[in-house]
Image (tube, rainbow, N blue to C red; front, side):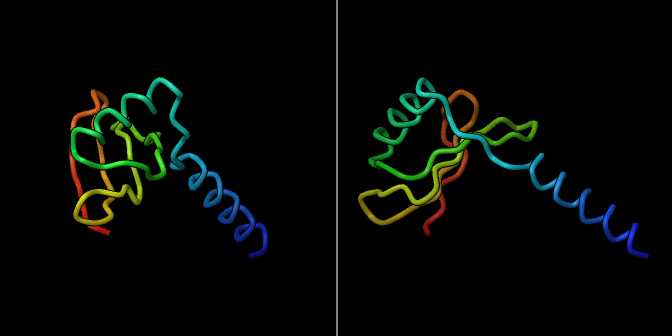
Length: 84
């Protein structure tokens, strides 16, 4: 039973790391900042999805009417904007 549990734990940890977000490059960060400015927002934690979608996330962006989580596509166009 122990070898099975250890194998399961290793598989779980491996899959978690495989789905983790990655930091954005400086060039991507500039494009994200420009897209946020158009929306009237600033700041937030920027990440790139490592899944096949390749979209960008900005967590806790500060906007005129509150704080939002924002998703942008690979061309830095708005996909979703949800209030925190």
